[in-house]
Amino acid sequence: MAKPTVHVLYVPGVGARRPGFQRAAVWLWRFHGVKPELVNMHWTVDEPWEVKLGRLLARVDQLHQAGAAVALVGPSAGGAAVIAAYARRQTVVTGCVLIAGKIHRPEAIGPKYRRENPALLAASQDCVASLETIDGAGRARILSLYSSGDTVVPCRDSHIDGARNQTVGRRGHILTIARQITFGAGSFIRVLRQA
Image (cartoon, rainbow, N blue to C red; front, side, top):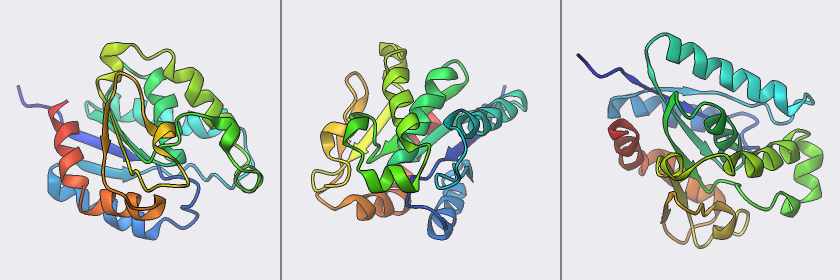
């Protein structure tokens, strides 16, 4: 029996109001043998977090029902969304990758980010609570990549006990994300395909 195609859902963070570059980079992942798709959370749109998360979960369910293996990738605040979705669909999602993911310390989110992205604080708080429901086997399917030079999302906000954690250089936040979704994609997509 053939293995199902891995469908990778990429969930951008709050800086992706117009995710053209990210959409193009993610489209290229098909050359690594997966079906990539960008799922925009529309962070600046004032709607409840549950509505945003519901759309992501609905897409996960739709792909699973169609027979696809589903994996999640999320940079920055997209990492919080990925953890929240993964916690709710652990039996469906084969694995997830976080890139400079904002996983811990929602209280450290600055007022400007909160003001411009109405659901961000709720998403971050949900992420913290959701992470508590993921056991050791579930955490082993999480790969968290982060940079020691990131001042927007420090390492301690991305490190997850029990997950595969990896420092990927000393670049800043945006450069870390850009480098990983382009030059680093082959490496983490291999991990997702093996899962």
